[in-house]
Structures are given as structure tokens and as C-alpha cells.
Image 1 (cartoon, rainbow, N blue to C red):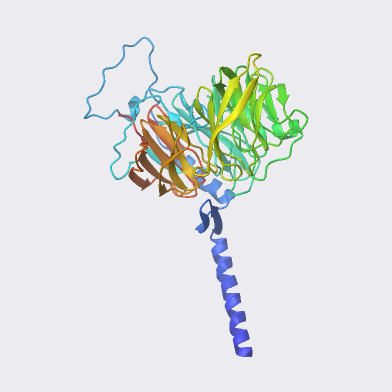
Image 2: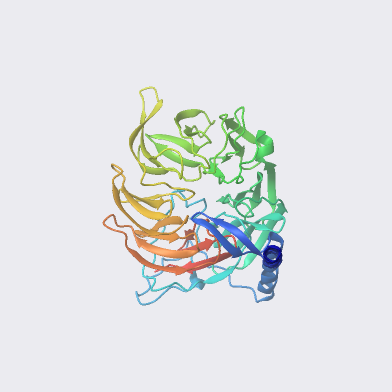
Length: 474
């Protein structure tokens, strides 16, 4: 027995030593949506050193040519023959994808047709390391903006869309750690300014050209609110002369609007906790409103003063998916846990009040921290990890197929661009007849919960380790 006891002891010691060595080398238990993985990951500090070395080498290279901006006085160029592809150097930059999940925050790219013949894989325009966090990009004037974790600091960063070269960073001390390091909220670009929100509530307006701070505040301190378990994640929403955030404070501080020029508080509303879902400006039943989830309900608020227009109780732990506008008076809502997915209909009364009723519900579309898209009367999204199509008129299931983890879905040119949890890009036809995956290939390495972004035909993807660009222009 003593021999066996000694052997067991030596085995435990050996395992402890090996485990310590592997831990020192960066082996960590990483939680994915689909389960637990062992992966070699760098600390925030080690990753920051790696990124700085990469950026130093990048700066040592010759300056990259700027993106070509449109000349309003110039005649429209003739279309290229179908056999030719436009050069990245001739990119016509615009201000299209300036908000989380696109201009309408609905995950749909409508600016121009894109290539849907990818072959077995796409070759990136560029690929490079990026700081941690789960934010996406916004794109304007040939620049891509995001927010990342750089060591012990959160950093807003601007990149050249065509080359990936870092143009500026603006950083402050903050390190949020839960389900990975880093900020979660996608910045918002508007009229030459970038509005960035960190995971601990730091909120800044930056000059998009230089990164200079124009004003700052702490939305959690302002609202007397505590942080969420997984950090502040709702993307700022520009509404007229204000920018709206969701700190989740009591006493009329759940949703707060700041003057976007000065940073002064304009109004506050509700007494709920916050959710991880981002507010969106919509028109439903003929009434313009801010639509947002709180911790306990879905609400429509007046854009002018935040007054409550209507509400629907909706208590779901860790609500992160976006409501989907499915018609002039309809909104589809889903979550990974809590109530079943539901189609709602709004109606305006004679005196302007709004009422809401349920049209149908289903347990066949459980969005987690992904969101669905709408195409030609059908809803496409991830039911947990499986791609699913529903008839928007009645909720009937059309098909389920393919496993993509807790990925993200974008709609473009009648196709679904799916960025999987494993960092793959997949192209799927948006066809209610059947699940038709055209191709799938590895795009970036690492756990990927970040939403893709696209402007001027350039697709951007990132995760907690890498970022890459793909040219989808026809």
C-alpha cells in the first residue's frame, strides 16, 4: 500500500509540475459557447507586447497609399468588365457601416452587391494581431475603428481599411476580465466623431481623424449603477443631437442621453438594470422610437426625452441579442434563455398610445449572443449553434442545418455570411427551401464572438487575437 501511495503522490507531483509548466507557457481553460476548450493563450500584457512589436515593424515600412476618395465633380466611372476585379488601391471610401451591425443595426449589408463565388477560400487583403475584447468594427472614410484590450489599458484604434495599418490609438487604464479580457461595446462613428464605451463604463467622444479626446465621462458612476457580470456591452446610439447609452441605473438612469457635442447629460429614463443588447432607433406603427432591452423588459422610448411609449416584460439572463424589425409594425425577439422567440405587433391608438400583442412564438430559434437577420419574409439565425430558417409570417420552421458555434450572422446579396465561433467564414444561401452551405474556411484563429462588418465591399472580421480583411467587391 505504501508503494502505491508513493506512486500516486509522485504522479500528482509530476502532474502538478507539468501543469505549472503548461500554465506558464499560456495553457488556459477557455469557455466557448459550445463547451470547454484547452488552448494556449497569452496574457493581456504578453499580447500587448506582441502587438506593439508588430505595429513598430509596420510603422517602419514605407507609408501606405491613402484610399481614393470620391470626387463629387468627376464623372461616374465606367463599370469594369466582368473578368476584371477592382484594385484595393482604387477603393471608393464612404461612410456606410458606422454603427453596430450596420447602419440600421440589423446585420444587413445593402450598400452594393458583393461576390458570392468564393471558391474554396478567400485570400485576405491583410491579417494581423489585435487586442482582446468582443467589439466589432465601424467603418468610415476608408478607416476601420474598434476598441481593444492593450495590456492593462483599453484602447480605441483606427486602421487603414485597405492595408490594415494602425493610424492612431487612444487609451486609458482599464482591464475587465470575464469570459476573456477586454471591452465589449462596438464604437459608433458619426459626423467625424467616434463614440467609444469601455467594459467598465468609460465613455469618450474622440476626433475620428486623430483620436484626440473631445469629452469623457463614466456612465456607471454618473448613473450610480453597478457593472454587469460580463461588462458594459451596449453600443452607443446617436439620436439627433444626443448619444444614448444604457448604464442600467435606478431613479431614471437606466437609459441616458448625453449631448454628443459637449457630453452633458440631456435626459434619463426608467429604473431597470441594464442588458447586454444595444439600443436601436426604429419606426414602428408609424412612431419613431428607441427600441432597447433592459434587464426585465423590452421598451420603446421617445427619442426626444426618453418617455416610455410601450413595454413588454422580457426577463432573460444575460440578454444580448438584438430585436429584429420584421415589418412596419412588427418586431421579432429571441434570446438564448428565458421566453420563447416571439413575433410582436405594435399598433397606435387614436390618442397616439402604443399597444403590443404577440402574433406567434416558437422554441425553434434561441439566439444567444448572436442576432437574426430578415430576408424576403424569412428569418435566418443561430438556434444556439445551428443555423435555422423560420417563416416570419407564422414562425414555422423551414429548416435547420450546419453547426457554427456561438457565431455571428450577416446578410449580403441574398447570402448569409457566418463568422463561426472557431473563426471560420462560411457562405450560405438565404434560401427557405433548404440549408445550402457554399463554402467554409478558417479565417482567423481564436475564440470568435465578434460581429463581422463590411463597407465598400470590404469585409472585416476580428476576435480576441486576430483581425483580417477580405475584398468582396465584384
